[in-house]
Amino acid sequence: MRKSFTASILAMAMTASTIAMPLSATAAEDQFTAAQKNELHNIIREYLLENPQILNEMIEKLQMAERQQQEQQAKQVIASNAHKIFRNPNDIVVGNPDGNVTLVEFFDYNCGYCKRSMADVLRLTEEDKDVRVVMKEFPILSEGSVIAAHAALAARNQDKYWELHLALMGAQGGVDSLEKVLEIAGKTGLDVDKLKADMEAARAEHDKIIDETRNLAQELGINGTPAFIIDGTLVPGAAPYDQLVASVKGVRESGGCKYC
Image (cartoon, rainbow, N blue to C red; front, side, top):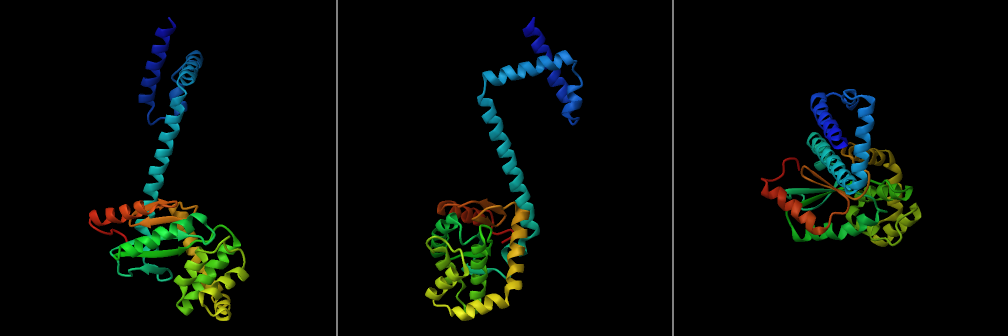
């Protein structure tokens, strides 16, 4: 009797779900009596207890759906902000400025994953002479990160952005103060007094550059570093070298940059 009733309940549930869609779940539930609802809840509970692995499957499916939604949102943001992302004159470009594929990196000087990713980015620019790399100053971890970003931007006045970038990324223990940043800058060959003066003079300008990057990252759903963009694809996290190479290759094989 219970089996027959259970089958009936499940059949009603399926029918109600079909009819109710796109009605709300509450509206669908209203198709049942209180006793039927209680029985249906018990059946579902028993099934989940007997098959707990289904919860992992549900979580995986939900996470996949969320990733797909985030990827789609990121593609839309990239498409509508391509110039800001790939061709912003305030950003530093390394590698081949005329490269046929652009890799964009959002980074923080105190990010351990960024430090490890730096070797892969360098290797990519050394082994692929047609890659253009755009650096996005995205200091989110500490006040020291903000100071380091200001110093790197100011180092452009001495044509030593990249030298200071590499030195800051390679700093043991990170950078946590102006004194530490200036010490690293001095060892890199910058005129420290000029760097300090340039940092102060351009503070408002640099704040604006950093804020624009933060706003862009927020639109893209980037909340950590590093994060990479290769044409229309957002790659969050420390992508290994092989993944970067494959992504660049994929852009070329699909007909070249759509946005970059």
